[in-house]
Image (cartoon, rainbow, N blue to C red; front, side, top):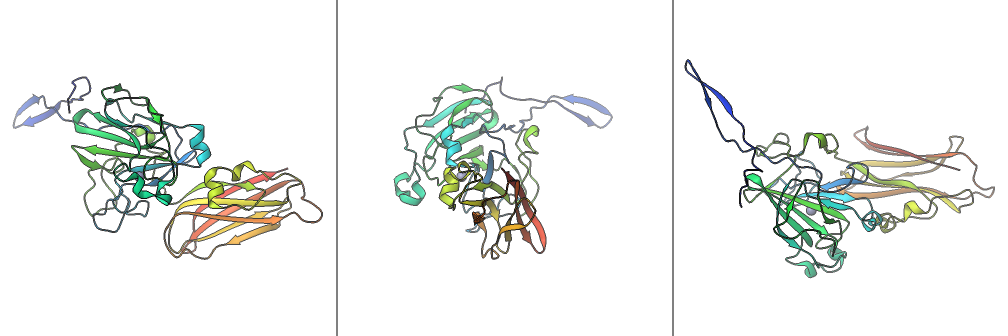
Length: 336
Ligand SMILES: [Zn+2]
């Protein structure tokens, strides 16, 4: 790639040699500093579903030696919480300043992983952008919405500049941005660049320091939680429709639902709803998970009693336990 002096970062180092203090100018390339590649709030409007697979075998491991990846995954997946959020439009952003070197647009949005993976052979990234940065760094953005790209090869872009929007193009089951970082042509994990092999900690975060707290590793997370007035399915939650049917005083049912990601084999889940006087209205205790799950859903609900619903506050509590310890908890409520 072309190196621009305006992009390069230099620093000088002081070296003491014997009795002589010598100031020796030295050019040291610094690592790229990454901003959010997606206009979302991690932990609130998006979550990291998958990290880079650091395991070179047919098994898989994320940079914390956890389960949030799959075999051969070479980037970070920032997942939106529903199709509704994607349809509203979420910008994909240049993670660092640089020059656009490649783009692809025109791949239709659709759920190809379930229907016809062969339809996206060799275009698994779908609509995407590749940007080169100083010192042989490169970032790639995949699964963007057809017709949404706002840049073309040769464009100079600034960090944070919109490139287009999240879509469902290429090999993807749900709306997310797949974000790949490369250095000198090799995959770089932005959470643990240079991690010594065989370790579950270490390496350098390439994220801007202002983002590190928001992007702290969460081995389990709640993606969706709420109340609805009719039975829910994973598809209804994915579509964003569950949240839209908020129960009212005359609703035929009150149902609390939850969707969580990153749960592990052996985790136990419980979702309970209490009525305005604190009595348990409905409870769902799931059997311990038989294997690690990319996502799970659980609901607990009850049909309207003969006398109708009491006015007041209905509270839902979701708890995931492991070895007798609470490892994930979410409380939410409904009132009328
Ligand atoms: Zn991915």
